[in-house]
Each structure stands twice: as C-alpha cells, then as structure tokens.
Amino acid sequence: MSGLPHGVDTDGGDAFLAAVRPLVDAIGGVLLPVTEADGDDVVLEWGGRRIAAVRLPHLSDSLEHLLNDLRRRYGRPLDELDRRTKQAVVRTLEARGAFTVRHGVETVATALGVSRFTVYNYLNRESAGGVAGAGERPDPAAGPPGGRGGPIPGRSE
Image (spheres, one colour):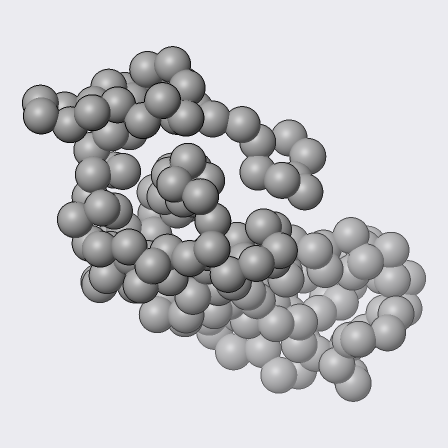
C-alpha cells in the first residue's frame, strides 16, 4: 500500500490499513510503524498481529484540522460561503466540540470572516431551536424554525 511510512507491517494487513486510512486522515492522525509507537499512540491489530500505530493529533491542532476538512468539503475558503452555509458550518463545528477549545469562537470567526458576536448569534440561534431572539429578524434563507439545513456538499449521510 503506497503512502505508508517505512516499517509499517502490511503482511496480510493491506486491506485493513486501506480501510482505516480514511479514518486516520479524518481525525488528523498519522500511521506509524509499531516500533515507533509511544504510550499515547493507538496500536492497530489485525489477525492477532500488531500491524501499525496511529499517533493522534494534539488537541491544539484539532480545530484547525476541522476547519481544513470543511474547506475541502466546500471546495473554497470558509469566508466565501453564504450566511446559511456558515451557520451550517458552525452547527457542524459545535457538534464536533470545536467551541470547547480555548479561543475556539475567535478562531472560527476569523475563518468564516465574521465577528465573534456573529458566531455567538449562530450558536444561540441553534440552541434556541432556530428561532430568532428578541430584536433579531429571522433569516428567510435559513428555512423553517428548528430546521437543520441540508447535508454538507460532497458528504454522503
């Protein structure tokens, strides 16, 4: 299997590694030879043999990895998306825990090209079931109150 680091034991595990590669990439992990694994790495076994290890990303890198994944999914910088799509991005990031990371709101606001206040409004709109708050006009493009929006383009559910 190409793209694996030297020393990864693929004897009988090629299909397994091919199957887990998208998951490892999606979480921002790195496949390593078992001999390079440390205590925090996850060792993958197949057929009773230790095949490879996965080094998980640092928490500080996780938010940027999520943002990069969304940029790839949408095929353009996030600040070029329309408001409804930015709201869907915020919902996705909230579901993935992006706002539990220190400075998460600021980082997301910068990526979306909006203010922190706008990100908080998107979050409040979602937590209120999609209903606009007092003094706030509903977004007609956002669909019915409580709606979750459509699927992310390029992603099969």
